[in-house]
Length: 403
Ligand SMILES: *[C@@H]1O[C@H](CO)[C@@H](O)[C@H](O)[C@H]1NC(C)=O
Ligand SMILES: *[C@@H]1O[C@H](CO)[C@@H](O)[C@H](O)[C@H]1NC(C)=O
Ligand SMILES: *[C@@H]1O[C@H](CO)[C@@H](O)[C@H](O)[C@H]1NC(C)=O
Ligand SMILES: *[C@@H]1O[C@H](CO)[C@@H](O)[C@H](O)[C@H]1NC(C)=O
Image (tube, rainbow, N blue to C red; front, side, top):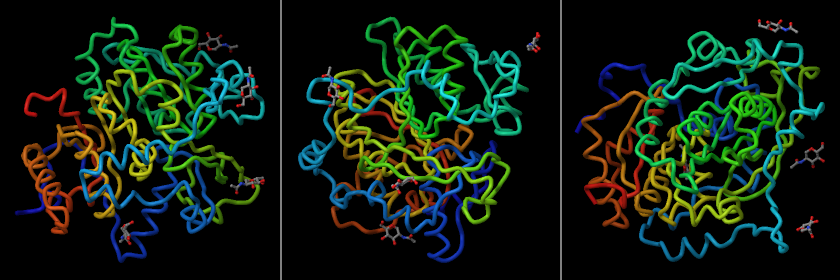
């Protein structure tokens, strides 16, 4: 079989280049990717990579997952998460927009801007208003959203429309979308515009200034439909320091490339997805969509969210797969398959259909892997996934016709 990564793509932008070079280069790139909890181009400059990787929130996916059919054991392990305060109070606290918007200690790239000129009505179906960072801080989103009223990931927006439009959003509670890697909230706001409830995660405080403004502009700030969580999600809870800069124009993620006077230290809190899910009662809710865009951190998010993933009420998972280690990719998708997910579509980074001829071959391949516990044969599909950054749309088999 040929590797589709070697073939020309049928339209749509090319995938991001995969890391090349020896294993040292691969490791370095992978570790750098791990730290990009927020989408690329944000001004994160990180401490030495080895220190980061030794932090307990970054440990590799549990080996038992790749053996498959360890559901009971995984569920038991899934119990080992932080519990809400004994008096029922929230231990993991959501963002209170009034506090964030009034907090002068949060550096704001829009401090000197005219707020009216920093918002845009989108051209999406349905439309919504979004507040943007100043162009000097986030040119990527400015040039697309402010100039065109749409995101550069147009295909992902279209996929959201397809997925969310299938639900009756008049039911109460509304279906829940969990957005991991919120950035300024394009997908959270778009999901809310479809009438779904939203829970959004993002470790960088500055993003909440924008999304809180957006909630105000759309009159969604007081209706309890959107909860915001200023946490990164990892395999374990913890906190660690990132060094950030003001200017995202710097292309390096090495602290030492950033002049000391521009360095800012930011303490980032990490929670596990399960701990928030248990606290908030999401195990008993219909979750229409779990969106994961964490730049190589995907396996850690799932590791900390096993209980929710195995629970079966998350109906769709839309994830950007940017892990370039075939072992880790294999373990991650084995876990999803084991938890009842089947691959529905592969899309490019921008969300356009990608290698449609491969979609039907994926689930049989995963079934084969699940049957042969010690099957270490490297399939060309897995090889492809570990080389291309792409979006994967998974559906739980309970909502599929081909189960
Ligand atoms: C891939 O990940 C596995 C498991 O974490 C690790 O043992 C291996 O060294 C990694 N390979 C590369 C090339 O980084
Ligand atoms: C509930 O417990 C938390 C700590 O778990 C504490 O901070 C908080 O004050 C308590 N609230 C009440 C009303 O007792
Ligand atoms: C802000 O911008 C709007 C639209 O361009 C303009 O009408 C308004 O006068 C500006 N406000 C200030 C205080 O400059
Ligand atoms: C982060 O920085 C603060 C202040 O410099 C320090 O007290 C804390 O120990 C650091 N945390 C970690 C996890 O390194």
